[in-house]
Image (tube, rainbow, N blue to C red):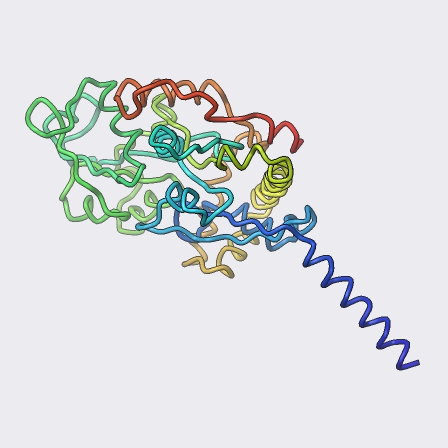
Length: 322
């Protein structure tokens, strides 16, 4: 009996090992550190959604010195989370990135100013200092200033751009009149730093119609020509959006999963999951071409890119993922 039991156990273990080895490895590079912003991917891995699709997914956190566009260009990832502005700039420079899905269908970007400061409306920007992130995050801001006709080299006829750290200290320390924040992250850092919502003047990029596409999924154009790789991207997107749906329906559990993978401050992660849920839209990951066209036009107008991109996105993956 024991021999039979051991044989059955060995067979089960061998089957599990065979299934694990049969899974196709795939690496996802995130745009930033482990946090609720990427909750859907961590949930998809934790809940076995990727495994169900026959994928063995490795999730690599980002950071201030990590550019996803460079990582994938160097072969360090199969798919990356990136903002459209940075992806299109990279494409024009010879990194043939293609948007295969757009999980974030709304922008989370805002500019906030202290109400006791000099900036109350867009008309007050002139002559003042505005905090901006760089590393590909600056493109929506510069497109907005171009739309307003404001120079960004300083002086009375324009604005002074402060290269902002990824926190709210420039506003706290009055180094800038306004700073960049995300609805799901730094805005709440400002609240935690002592600001009340009524203490802040908020310029929301989406509400003003200045939003450019943010967290999208990108793969290399040449790799998408391989049918197996393309099929794996379909599986990856399908499982990822399943992960996002679960995360939205179960934000507290999703935050705990993020914490288990290296996230910081559970209360902050839970709050972040609630805010990120507002940006996912239909939950299909389908790219809205109207927002895409607005993103491209803004980048062209500011000469951030110099020519109309071709082949920069595909609907094939999300269509098949349905």
